[in-house]
Length: 213
Picture: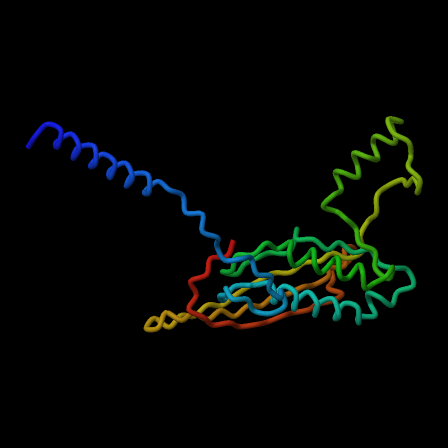
């Protein structure tokens, strides 16, 4: 084989190798599937046996209606003060869920529906309120436009509750079922008695390979 022919073959092989490397490093810019908005009140395409959006909306809607129909809460001459947050609302179930999604939605919808018949105390923001009150008392800022009070609002009732579950699995088919029980109750913060109780239950079964975050 002549020198020139060998040189040409080597050059051609180099070009092929370089082209292969370049194609291997090329980024695939093919467009993916477009985002799809789903109805949060209905089961979505991705679902398992955990607590999902339709469950959160259904349970909080039911609890709101139940509370608004209770004369001990909405039939008083003076609107009662209520704390609704997740401080004493526990998740003892095998489902992973942000408890605030339940308590926040319940409080916000109640506040809208009550129209002044219930007053909600933001106890989780007590430190923020105290800092502002201290600035006013020291004269760092003015007193605002509403009022000055000797103390912040005390509450009459506070939400407590828990999420529990019972799981079962068919070992042959690997199908799983989960029963959820979600309880909500209001405690009288002077007497320690229950003034209202509500419960929501549901059961699901699926080939559960869904990860909830």
